[in-house]
Image 1 (tube, rainbow, N blue to C red):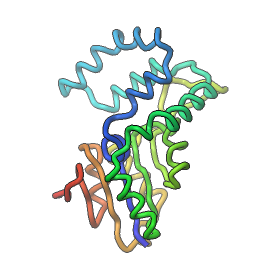
Image 2: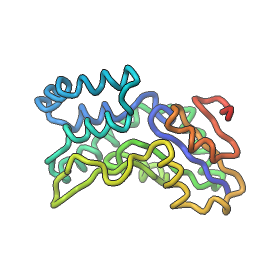
Image 3: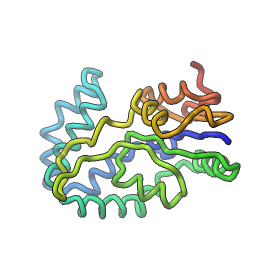
Length: 198
Protein backbone atom coordinates (compact mmCIF):
# COMPACT_ATOMS: atom_id res chain seq x y z
CA UNK A 1 0.00 0.00 0.00
CA UNK A 2 1.16 3.55 -0.76
CA UNK A 3 0.53 6.90 0.92
CA UNK A 4 -0.27 10.04 -1.09
CA UNK A 5 -0.05 13.42 0.67
CA UNK A 6 -1.60 16.47 -0.98
CA UNK A 7 -1.36 20.09 0.07
CA UNK A 8 -4.67 21.84 -0.67
CA UNK A 9 -4.30 25.57 -1.42
CA UNK A 10 -2.48 26.09 -4.70
CA UNK A 11 -1.92 22.35 -5.18
CA UNK A 12 -5.43 20.93 -5.47
CA UNK A 13 -6.84 24.43 -6.07
CA UNK A 14 -5.91 27.26 -8.41
CA UNK A 15 -5.57 29.80 -5.58
CA UNK A 16 -5.43 30.29 -1.82
CA UNK A 17 -8.90 29.62 -0.44
CA UNK A 18 -8.73 31.24 3.00
CA UNK A 19 -9.27 34.81 1.66
CA UNK A 20 -12.37 33.61 -0.15
CA UNK A 21 -13.65 31.91 2.97
CA UNK A 22 -13.11 35.07 5.00
CA UNK A 23 -15.20 37.04 2.48
CA UNK A 24 -17.92 34.40 2.63
CA UNK A 25 -17.98 33.90 6.40
CA UNK A 26 -17.23 37.32 7.94
CA UNK A 27 -19.86 40.06 8.16
CA UNK A 28 -19.20 42.81 5.56
CA UNK A 29 -18.76 45.60 8.16
CA UNK A 30 -16.30 43.52 10.16
CA UNK A 31 -14.46 42.63 6.96
CA UNK A 32 -14.10 46.28 5.97
CA UNK A 33 -12.74 47.26 9.38
CA UNK A 34 -10.43 44.26 9.38
CA UNK A 35 -8.84 45.29 6.11
CA UNK A 36 -7.81 48.59 7.70
CA UNK A 37 -6.77 47.20 11.08
CA UNK A 38 -4.78 44.31 9.61
CA UNK A 39 -3.20 46.29 6.75
CA UNK A 40 0.15 46.79 8.56
CA UNK A 41 0.37 43.07 9.32
CA UNK A 42 -0.40 42.12 5.72
CA UNK A 43 2.12 44.68 4.45
CA UNK A 44 4.74 43.20 6.78
CA UNK A 45 4.01 39.73 5.44
CA UNK A 46 4.35 40.83 1.83
CA UNK A 47 7.61 42.58 2.67
CA UNK A 48 8.95 39.43 4.31
CA UNK A 49 9.03 40.85 7.84
CA UNK A 50 6.08 38.92 9.28
CA UNK A 51 5.50 35.16 9.13
CA UNK A 52 2.51 33.59 7.44
CA UNK A 53 1.55 32.01 10.77
CA UNK A 54 1.34 35.40 12.47
CA UNK A 55 -0.74 36.93 9.67
CA UNK A 56 -3.19 34.02 9.62
CA UNK A 57 -3.50 34.15 13.41
CA UNK A 58 -4.31 37.88 13.25
CA UNK A 59 -6.89 37.40 10.51
CA UNK A 60 -8.60 34.52 12.33
CA UNK A 61 -8.67 36.48 15.58
CA UNK A 62 -10.23 39.57 14.04
CA UNK A 63 -12.62 37.71 11.77
CA UNK A 64 -13.97 34.98 14.00
CA UNK A 65 -13.62 35.92 17.68
CA UNK A 66 -17.03 35.61 19.35
CA UNK A 67 -18.77 34.16 16.28
CA UNK A 68 -21.18 31.30 17.09
CA UNK A 69 -19.67 27.96 16.12
CA UNK A 70 -22.88 26.87 14.40
CA UNK A 71 -22.80 29.93 12.14
CA UNK A 72 -19.21 29.29 11.12
CA UNK A 73 -19.85 25.59 10.50
CA UNK A 74 -22.78 26.48 8.22
CA UNK A 75 -20.58 28.95 6.35
CA UNK A 76 -17.91 26.26 5.98
CA UNK A 77 -20.37 23.77 4.52
CA UNK A 78 -21.73 26.33 2.07
CA UNK A 79 -18.19 27.30 1.03
CA UNK A 80 -17.25 23.64 0.49
CA UNK A 81 -20.34 22.99 -1.59
CA UNK A 82 -20.62 26.24 -3.57
CA UNK A 83 -17.13 27.73 -3.94
CA UNK A 84 -14.49 25.01 -3.75
CA UNK A 85 -15.74 23.01 -6.77
CA UNK A 86 -15.02 25.99 -9.04
CA UNK A 87 -11.48 26.45 -7.72
CA UNK A 88 -10.08 22.93 -8.25
CA UNK A 89 -7.17 21.98 -10.50
CA UNK A 90 -8.50 19.20 -12.69
CA UNK A 91 -5.05 17.68 -13.26
CA UNK A 92 -4.32 17.53 -9.52
CA UNK A 93 -7.77 16.13 -8.76
CA UNK A 94 -7.22 13.48 -11.44
CA UNK A 95 -3.97 12.54 -9.74
CA UNK A 96 -5.72 12.22 -6.36
CA UNK A 97 -8.39 10.00 -7.98
CA UNK A 98 -5.65 7.90 -9.59
CA UNK A 99 -4.08 7.28 -6.19
CA UNK A 100 -7.43 6.44 -4.61
CA UNK A 101 -8.36 4.03 -7.43
CA UNK A 102 -5.04 2.22 -6.92
CA UNK A 103 -5.96 1.66 -3.29
CA UNK A 104 -3.51 4.22 -1.89
CA UNK A 105 -4.26 6.11 1.32
CA UNK A 106 -4.88 9.68 0.11
CA UNK A 107 -4.56 12.51 2.64
CA UNK A 108 -5.07 16.26 2.31
CA UNK A 109 -2.49 17.94 4.58
CA UNK A 110 -3.30 21.63 4.77
CA UNK A 111 -2.92 24.84 6.70
CA UNK A 112 -6.48 25.57 5.59
CA UNK A 113 -9.35 25.38 8.04
CA UNK A 114 -11.22 22.26 9.09
CA UNK A 115 -14.37 24.41 9.01
CA UNK A 116 -14.66 23.91 5.26
CA UNK A 117 -12.07 21.24 4.44
CA UNK A 118 -13.78 18.56 6.54
CA UNK A 119 -16.96 18.80 4.43
CA UNK A 120 -15.04 18.85 1.16
CA UNK A 121 -12.77 15.91 2.03
CA UNK A 122 -15.72 13.78 3.15
CA UNK A 123 -17.45 14.39 -0.17
CA UNK A 124 -14.32 13.23 -2.05
CA UNK A 125 -13.53 10.30 0.27
CA UNK A 126 -10.17 11.80 1.27
CA UNK A 127 -8.52 11.76 4.69
CA UNK A 128 -7.60 15.10 6.29
CA UNK A 129 -4.99 16.73 8.48
CA UNK A 130 -5.44 20.50 8.78
CA UNK A 131 -5.62 23.58 10.97
CA UNK A 132 -8.47 23.79 13.47
CA UNK A 133 -10.05 26.70 15.28
CA UNK A 134 -10.66 26.84 19.02
CA UNK A 135 -14.22 26.83 20.37
CA UNK A 136 -15.43 27.58 23.89
CA UNK A 137 -19.05 27.36 25.01
CA UNK A 138 -20.32 27.35 21.45
CA UNK A 139 -18.36 30.39 20.26
CA UNK A 140 -15.10 30.82 18.40
CA UNK A 141 -12.27 32.20 20.54
CA UNK A 142 -10.42 33.70 17.57
CA UNK A 143 -7.47 31.37 18.15
CA UNK A 144 -6.19 28.24 16.49
CA UNK A 145 -6.68 24.97 18.33
CA UNK A 146 -3.06 23.87 18.53
CA UNK A 147 -0.45 24.72 15.94
CA UNK A 148 -1.25 25.72 12.37
CA UNK A 149 -0.76 22.74 10.05
CA UNK A 150 2.13 24.17 8.00
CA UNK A 151 5.84 23.44 7.64
CA UNK A 152 7.23 20.99 10.19
CA UNK A 153 3.79 20.71 11.81
CA UNK A 154 2.59 18.91 8.68
CA UNK A 155 5.29 16.29 9.19
CA UNK A 156 4.54 15.97 12.91
CA UNK A 157 0.86 15.35 12.24
CA UNK A 158 1.55 12.88 9.44
CA UNK A 159 3.91 10.87 11.65
CA UNK A 160 1.43 11.03 14.54
CA UNK A 161 -1.46 9.67 12.44
CA UNK A 162 0.31 7.23 10.09
CA UNK A 163 2.98 4.57 10.60
CA UNK A 164 5.14 5.44 7.58
CA UNK A 165 6.93 2.09 7.72
CA UNK A 166 3.67 0.43 6.59
CA UNK A 167 3.77 2.11 3.18
CA UNK A 168 5.82 0.82 0.26
CA UNK A 169 5.95 4.25 -1.36
CA UNK A 170 5.12 7.75 -0.15
CA UNK A 171 4.05 10.40 -2.68
CA UNK A 172 3.74 14.10 -1.80
CA UNK A 173 2.45 17.14 -3.67
CA UNK A 174 2.92 20.79 -2.69
CA UNK A 175 3.41 24.31 -4.01
CA UNK A 176 5.07 26.54 -1.37
CA UNK A 177 7.99 26.52 1.06
CA UNK A 178 5.49 25.54 3.78
CA UNK A 179 5.27 22.13 2.03
CA UNK A 180 9.00 21.43 1.83
CA UNK A 181 9.15 19.43 5.06
CA UNK A 182 6.28 17.22 3.89
CA UNK A 183 7.85 16.76 0.47
CA UNK A 184 11.00 15.62 2.25
CA UNK A 185 9.14 12.58 3.61
CA UNK A 186 8.33 11.25 0.16
CA UNK A 187 9.95 8.77 -2.17
CA UNK A 188 8.32 10.73 -5.00
CA UNK A 189 7.69 14.44 -4.45
CA UNK A 190 6.07 16.96 -6.79
CA UNK A 191 6.32 20.73 -6.46
CA UNK A 192 4.02 22.89 -8.58
CA UNK A 193 3.47 19.97 -10.91
CA UNK A 194 7.17 19.20 -11.43
CA UNK A 195 9.46 16.64 -9.77
CA UNK A 196 10.90 18.23 -6.62
CA UNK A 197 14.64 18.50 -6.26
CA UNK A 198 15.73 18.21 -2.63
